[in-house]
Length: 64
Image 1: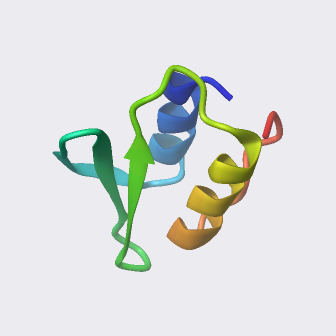
Image 2: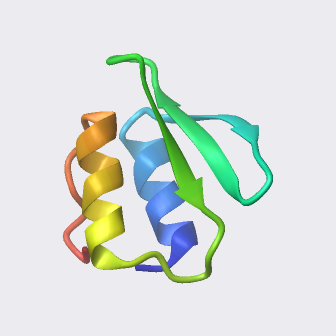
C-alpha cells in the first residue's frame, strides 16, 4: 500500500500525527490513546499496514 494512502486512511479514522522521528512518523489514535510508528517508505508492506491499523484500533483499509 502506498504510504500516502495509509496516512490518508489513518486521518479519516481520526488518528493524528504526533511528531516526525528519524526514519518513522509517530501517529496516535486519540480515542484509544495508542501510539504507533509509521515507516517512511513509499510502499508499506501489507502485513505492516494491517499491524499498524490493528495496534491503533482502526479498521484495516480494503486495499491492504
